[in-house]
Image (cartoon, rainbow, N blue to C red; front, side, top):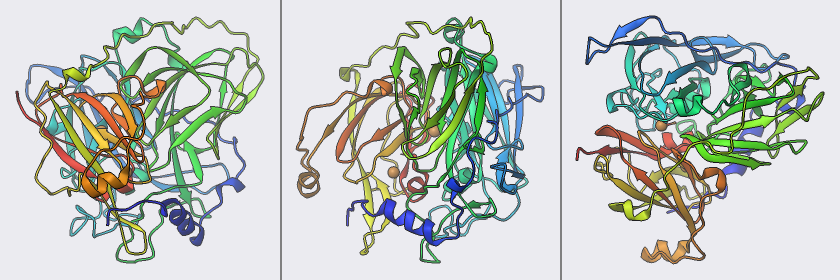
Length: 514
Ligand code: C2O
Ligand code: CU
Ligand code: CU
């Protein structure tokens, strides 16, 4: 049965309540300073395997088991992180410059989170497997972290990142088939920031005035360990979505940050498995949004609220200069996220918030050589629980059906009959959202007939830039326009709710040479 996801949230909450989890709201907020991940340092220069005369910076990032306190009043938690921290060290990259990263698996042989051995990729394979993907990077297919290219403890893969793309906040994270949700939940991710000359010239707040905020939710046990819930079927522990009540930023529960009364640039990433955030300042302070997933907007956009689906990023400038001495809470609809403590210091702020940022050609529909209609499908058990999610009614192992030609432009239209927004992500490319339109789900289900119930709605102003992940909303047709200006080869596209992705809501696609 093609299903609806009505019971999803209720069920996940019920399971959390049954289990022995910590009520995170009992912990005092704003007692830990916000950690700032270190910047990854290259371990020298190395020749490119393909062109040995060219030397490029080489980084080694090892995934290891670590112990770290998520909150002042908790015991250290077991986590899996790159380079000894969660999030891992930030990769700083320059557009036009290449880098090599050796991703090393130094994890123990056993997983500490509940593997569902029925899921594709998890059956019969070693428990601990990793493969790292640079989300938002346009990289050759052999360096993209294909989900089946995983490797076990003791092994590594060296990936090549020719960064020919505009300044943007990317992120790296695990992508191992069938256990991706568990590996990222354990902590295998970090930021990667691409810079370029256009951005340099804008004189935006930088250095210690540019702060990455990676927000992710977890469920914790009373002694402060990660808890990942399971279904009530011991052989099928997969749960449809993970929602935790412990909101962490850069690895600490509701931390605080001391700031000066001046402008800051915040690079915000939703690194959660499934939670969407709707962020605002409790005192009504504005965000000046300057960028989306794939880089700078044409002009800053003043906003009181920003919404982020899993894997989406937003680049904002916040001006604390009129908030001297204040303590300002950044909050989500139902949770505190963190606190900014504005000092009274006398400061001179020489950074700018220019009125124009970067031109963006708006892609016209007429540039597309092909339109694909793709459904987002959810299947339920007879008790109404989601048991499987597919893209275009196809499994991972079905033959590849999406084969765009290199350097051609296509429109991908997502039909979403489910009750959830599915954040859809394509590897190796950037795209623009064309529009969304409500349609009549029953007519489509019965006769494959698209009966529209309203006008085409343009993307929200905060999405009107280059994107790599976009919310396909419930009962809407969401259209994106995608120039496939990347390397030929096999990549993937998927829903970025990690529980969905691990249970078949991911498909390979192939860019074929022109
Ligand atoms: Cu965040 Cu397949 O990626
Ligand atoms: Cu990606
Ligand atoms: Cu989904």
